[in-house]
Length: 300
Ligand code: 2HA
Ligand code: ZN
Image 1 (cartoon, rainbow, N blue to C red):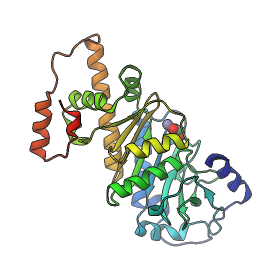
Image 2: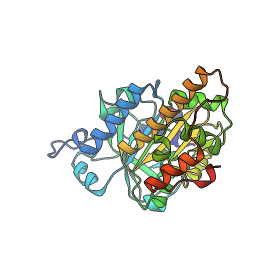
Image 3: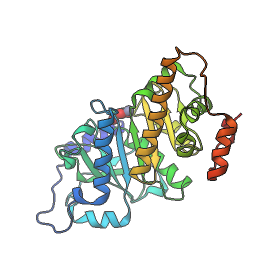
Image 4: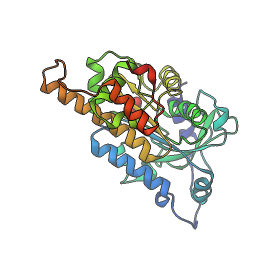
């Protein structure tokens, strides 16, 4: 049984109940949840979240968990096996969008469309401790997010907290016409708009089309996320990480905007050679001036 089915099974077996009267700042009014909700609304407004497309997870701080704990369910559902294990996420708490729930509805009813899940002490299962009302379950991509969080915590020394998956239009369009290799696509974006090499000096990882929500795409993405802060899924979308909501959303926005500029430029000149671009020497100069740790392999 996959994560998705076992989650449904666990939720069907027990309905959680919230504590009666509690004091404190409601989860919806906690600063981290305001940031979470704002990102969902911004992503919807950008046109990146048709239907139930996309998902968002946030690894909470101990202080945020303590502030939310009075509002946690008294009888959380049973542990839902994740199918993967991570030592560095034992006992962690994540805010997560719900499977089948729409980003568009997150501001309208956060406690229905978003949940907080606790990871068990073994680091291989989760349970819903807040939200996802009316039988909701964590995003079908939660096991992928979980694996990738584990990698990102390692490679960033714990600063990485946000993983954001969206379906930005121009990024997806590019994957229909460009070679699916990280060097080609990264160079294209770096040269489309000056800000790009600053926003993603290591480049962008690229995966060919794969079945979503499965172990294979999760493993492939987490492998690339050892190097890159963002990974493109061909004919699907983009996966971005960040230390906070601003950096994760900003990275998604920058990559999509550069893709949009490239698409428009290509349309304008009918797909031929560009008259003007940023030279490799120009990119090196930006990196030198700003002290960026760029991926030299991606420069000529
Ligand atoms: O949540 O975007 O990749 C729906 C998706 C799956
Ligand atoms: Zn998707």
